[in-house]
Length: 76
Image (cartoon, rainbow, N blue to C red; front, side):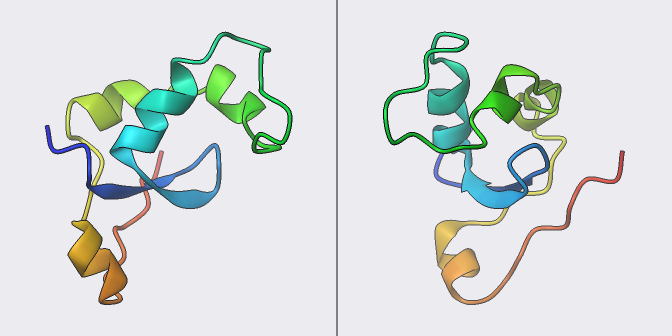
């Protein structure tokens, strides 16, 4: 899987790279660093990452994203 791809993260309500998703969810639960994203708690309850890992969530490359292309949001 290309971890540089961008997808729409529903818990964070933001476009995010797959690599950032992996970094956020590997942090210990409840141990957000000082100055961390205020919505980090959403990652602790996320059930979206299995679909991200299995490429069931639409992604775009960083180049496409910077060119204005946005991946569709997952309708669950």
